[in-house]
Image (cartoon, rainbow, N blue to C red; front, top):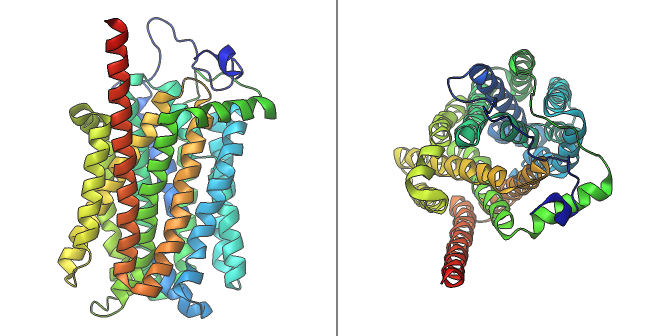
Length: 425
């Protein structure tokens, strides 16, 4: 559909004209490694900051004398702030550039991260985390839009997979570091350490990321933005991808919010440092996200989503056991399935959007982090009400939603093929 037919601006997020030789980045080409490492570090900083309190929830509960559900707001506020601001931040990136917005977002987020350890009470902590999440909103949609503009289409899934892999490393390192640091010096020193880690990542990101060569500045007019958003929400495939991202993240947010409580209680009774080390399973997510392109090549997009959903469900069921090795295996499968599904769905959004890519990605990220906020809160409440089985039940319902939506997409694609054959005949 042309910009004229959609009512969108011809410049807002439009795919830039590329010379016949295609000067965009490609694996092995100049600048590709710098770009990949820079965005990898941005992903590390984003997830390390965003989930810096998740492994510390039992300690925060004890320090402030609050329940698991109340403490979970330190996670939900950050992801909720990101979900609310990702679309406005993506609009700013259309006008001022992807690199500029990503740099500014990281600068504000790491500054707030250095203030978080001094929060005097839970209310102040939740407020700071909400501001931090809002600041981080400039990263996800801008990063995927940057990649869609600067990387050749055949390498896009792999490039986005590497960015998602950075997310997994950030999530893992943040939780492992905070677990061991908190065991010795408390949760405040632990989140301060994550703030310092993020400062280093932010500086390296800005020094390494190549200047954009294919960005075309767009308009900030609200009517243009509203039309672009309406176009994306009217696309059935994009709507399905947004819902899949939200549901996958509901599983992930619920599991990793409640797992710390489960492993510190009977029959496991693990120390805080050991619980933090459990998050080393995020390395599995690094692998599954970075290989998502090959999975799509073998199974197709919908086949890859079925595989990701099945792997996640199997992990949820295994985690019900009162055996630590089986729980760990369950977490491995949940993590692998989630990151693979997220990489496939997010890259499909970038490929599907024909204009306003930053807004298309922003809507996906908004849905994704709404799922995270919902999963963190509902997963913690379910754990408080019914134990780990309640959290797993929430996760299985979300996976069932992913499978149902994918089946619907498969049937819709089959109908389109049949209509084309009938028209051709």
